[in-house]
Image (cartoon, rainbow, N blue to C red; front, side, top):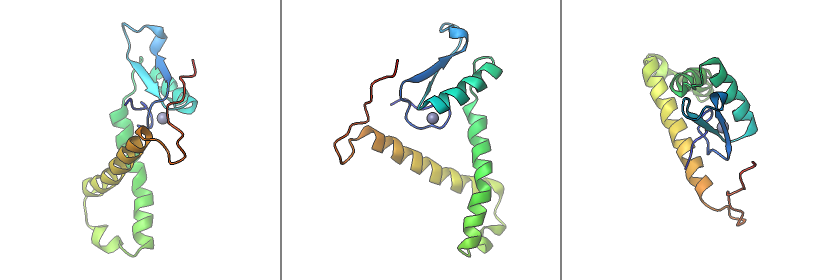
Length: 123
Ligand SMILES: [Zn+2]
C-alpha cells in the first residue's frame, strides 16, 4: 500500500514530480486533490522534496494543545503536568500511529456494504 506524502493516509492515484523530471526528483503520491495541491506547493518551494519528518514533528507539537485540553477536561492534567515534552509527544505519536495504521488496514479491506476501496485512478 502506498502512503500519501502529506497526510499519511492511503494514496489514491494523485501524484507530483517536480518539473516532471522523473530521473531527477522523487515521485510523491497523494490521497486526494487537496493533498496533491498542498504537497506539490511544498515540493515546488523545496526543490522537489517534501520533508515529511519535519511536518510530522510539527503536527505532533501542534497536537499538544488539544491533548492538554482533553487532559484538563478529564481531570487528568496533574499526572502529566511535570512530564517532559518528549513524553507527551510519545503519547500523541502512539495514538496517531495506531489510528493511521488502523485506517490503512481498514482501507485495504472491503466495507461492510461490499464497496471496495479500489476506485479507478483518475488519470
Ligand atoms: Zn493525503
